[in-house]
Image: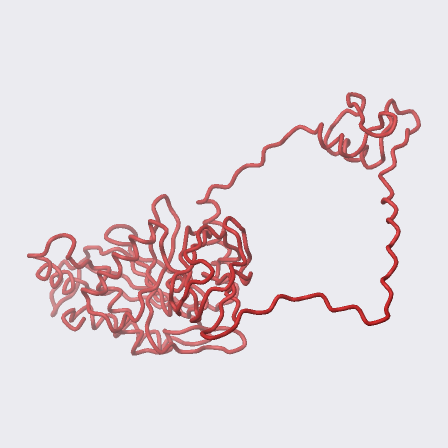
Length: 389
């Protein structure tokens, strides 16, 4: 028997609200099946189960706000019998039933009394609370003995002060801020940058997309993700997870997290699985799929937690450079500014070229400048020869 628990869907998640069950008791499940949807600060995320078996019991109700690790369901392995109900142990032979306990005395109430010089009988707690809330005791009708004013009377008379409601965007911003604060406090970041000529990649895409409908065109962002995946496969220190006390564990595959800006603001970074094994066209298709599902709140939990390196790009317009914050437990983040037209030296002549500034944020517990420079060098080589992608 296994207990399926609320998973952690990112470093910024502490709790989640169960919004949908996609299985019922008696359903057969296998590893990777989506079984529920959970709402976090970053929207609704589909969560997968990590064992094979049969759902025996659902332990959490829809709408429940649950911490990470809270039990959600009981799953029985193939052929496993349901657990027997727990019965009360029988009383020993000859033992007498314990006498019924006398009813306990009621707790001592917050006894009201008239304070010297006061105009109303009120309990001390009621007086203290009335002072805190600015309530006039003389204007109250008490519900205690002899009309004495109790604490509940003061609370009931206090003016209602509406609490400002937090919008989903405010909650997301708080979650992002908390996760990034922990990242900067616990990960010794360092940064290396290089400006790269991307005209070869732009020319390659122009030729490749010439006869394609818009839905089949490949964008420059897919070139960046593909190049990052191949570079990460070559430089293992950039690709993996760091945790205490295990330290750094290099990943056996490259799962590239793609930073996606949500409509209305906010950011998520779901991962493209096995990105180093995909073609450029498949990478573009995977990115379109992630963006569509991220903005409709249908990402999967595994996509939010399996990333081994993240790429964050400003797109076609914006600032020339960006220095990103690493998503723990990852150890590197590739930040790419928008392409800008700049004078560039090509074969001894100054010509206008589109260039992009790459800034790699790295974890100094795992790598130093030499490994980061190798990654950047490989990334730049691929952009100069995009047919290798």
